[in-house]
Image (tube, rainbow, N blue to C red; front, top):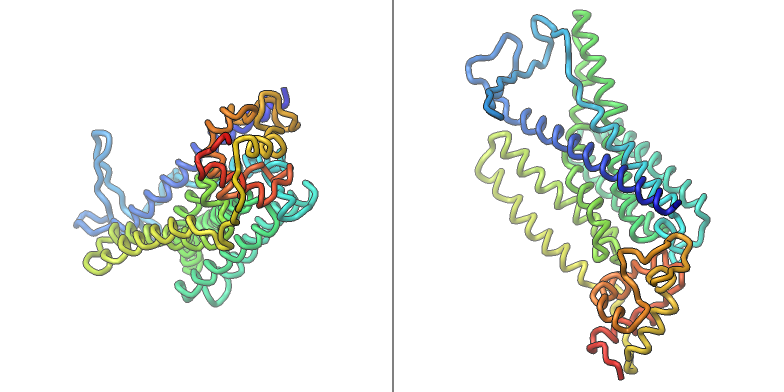
Length: 398
């Protein structure tokens, strides 16, 4: 019953997280596009700085942007904030359900660092807070006047954090925590800076005072960072299903490639929406293509090389390894306390079942070492190499 409740909690919270993330990212991309698409078509009201005419759903929309208050403040203002808040809350809840509730399987890998579940959870939560604190200090430092330099420093900090996570958590958890740390920065930007600053500006305008221009400048900086970090966060979240990414020995380097790739793609759309042309739009896609090829090539490379297996490995040998290291979960009758049935219906009780799932074994056990979960059964590199040799040589019975 406990496992059933766990699965339902994960499903429902994941559903909520996806819905609110779509809403947040959608509104964020829309307003970035809207801000870049503003023009003067000769129908601007006094004090308006730009306008946009759009058509959707059979109707026409005329939107104008005021850098200062219009002659008459509306009685109702629509704020876009809850999309961000609920995305983070549901995301953190999902991490708690999957990685804290199942810390021994998903958060901890004792071959990486042998720590208790309580210590791992404390490090997880503390790192998110520290990540925001470091980022916030960067945004308040003199670097805020030098956007490119600051983003470079932020890039380096995230890559270093990715390396640090890899020294503490399982590879799956380490990669996810990089995304969670960035998402925390983004949501905290909305909660701690952007919305409070907007409220101060509105209050000043209502009172007939001139708003502090530093408020708008600070909000714009954080909003720009959020825009450029959105695509990398999405990649890190969905890559949780692809061991060749998070399971790579140098997954911290992959984080660097993903950050650069996402930023380059967003720069293209930002420049295009702003009406730029020529050389301003000619470098992004070739650069993105090169980064993508490099990313794929990196995932195919093993930094330490492959372990050589000199003797022949037969089905009986591979089955013996699976029986020792894998069937605690992947069996008709799992003995692991976290599972009452084989995950995904994958079982290794017979030679036929082992051959049926050979491709998955190669991807998740041999090439990326993401299985067994948390390496709770202590599978060795030699055993992984022998399993790989059995698959590569045709899964011979004798």
